[in-house]
Length: 354
Figure (tube, rainbow, N blue to C red):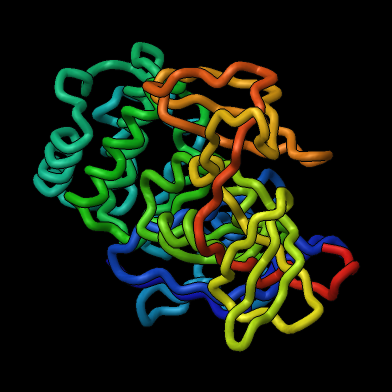
């Protein structure tokens, strides 16, 4: 196990920039997820770390060793692919042993590592089966075990759960987290699934258009995002542009329905600011004279999602499923938190574009 460090790593295909010069550090035993929409550069970054795709420049270090000038097999890295990539003509046992044999690991040590991986990946009774005899979840466990037996310094995951159904994906997600805690290998995980990223990661790096937009723990990125893109991509939110008034050292923003909210950051005079207001933080109360009107609702068991119109603005709100449903057409009073944080990349002069 070792830390992963990128210094100025970038990638271009002619005039097309896939990844701008990027610095990144993942600590020993840390589980970090690259999260972003398709085409944002996350898989390109992962493949450059693995050595599958050459860099256009920059340096990659695993521990104290520079590895971007080494072939993939010399990097002490194992990768778990979206498509499992099992050898169809080899049994589970032979799939697990293949990489060890290529590295000329002694037979007793091969046996020990395979037994260990079989135990933690729950593959008992499957060693003599062929990949075609396994379910999707079982095949993914074999792919994980095959990476673990190599005892790599770094584990890479390229959307390994995206081909599975929702229930199996959730189950394997929990198993992956438990496996990481047991094995402790430094891990870099790529996904476009925000729920997956928040449930599994020590830290998330949100990517867009070939760059890391923001990095932080799941709870910090969700509750205290700095960028409008991260706030909007990670979960649901209402991005609201507020007129800001400064009073002494305090900044106050006016919400679209007229209420005033304190801003955690001081905003210069004559400015507007954008805030992220999560649906669960917007409280609704039936009121015939309320500022909003319910236009839609969706019951999902544990919670209810609402669409609420305020003037020309459509807001999202949510409440616990045990509460009674507010009917469509109901006028409602809206209550927001007493304080909100301004998004740093969305502060502009009044009347300016956001």
